[in-house]
Length: 291
Image 1 (cartoon, helix red, strand yellow):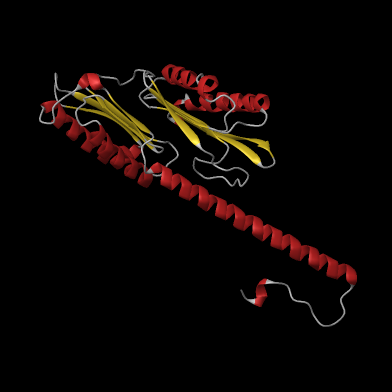
Image 2 (cartoon, rainbow, N blue to C red; image 1 turned 60 degrees about the horizontal axis):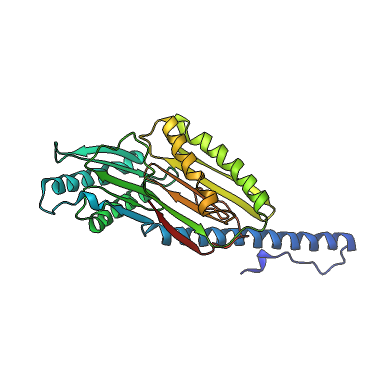
């Protein structure tokens, strides 16, 4: 680093008070620089962490009561449907479509998280379509969840209906230090972003944060699939949040994944644009499948 990055002192005498001021400015500048660097490093760490997580499915569901053969017409219709979902979802972040005619007709829905880029949305949907076909190759009813997107198809028309029949729960194994205060702040934040999510202009998405202390911030995000009405979206989110006491009581982080909505909170930034927060580690999570 060049010498011009640091203040220099002349050889002639400088009044003591001015010299102290210069020293204070030097220290303040150094601390500010370190703070900026630490924030940038933290954002990079979070980005790398999120990037590594987004490549893997959070879970999937293959309905064993809807077995089909790979050579059937309904299987052909599923492949056609998936091709459409992959190509069209990134345009708006959401699509509902169908393929074929009864009794081999299949319905499909794909949706990306409302805060991710078109590029990340496209990548996620491509992975989802590929993985769901591999994991549920012999089922006509299948779903798959990723951090950035959700995709499902079925031979039954599910569009516009609340579906909480199958759920996946993730929770951080670590507990918060002050459960009563934390749960109060979490409840208030969830109420606020759930109200945002049901507003038509927000297309089912609500997100926000609450500062718990100087070094601790609570982040939360909720999202409904866009085929739901305002009332149905509110109902799905209420059911999801209602599971907190059962699976995530006093935990530092939690995710509830349903086919119609998604709820998550963490003590680190996970939605975009990323915030700067260097006070919390990610911790270990546990997965529970419930149906």
